[in-house]
Picture 1 (cartoon, rainbow, N blue to C red):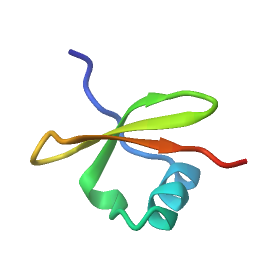
Picture 2: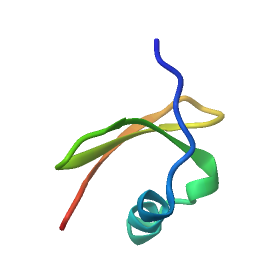
Picture 3: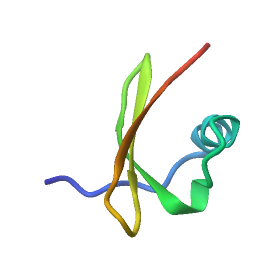
Length: 52
């Protein structure tokens, strides 16, 4: 399985708007319409819809 990457500033802003702490989440997949995240410690996955 691929490793998660640290989020960019724009991705951190999306996470903050979704009431998530960017320090606790890694970016697994960055698509045009959604952002796939994985929690650093628990491994829980979450998908954020990107509103542009």
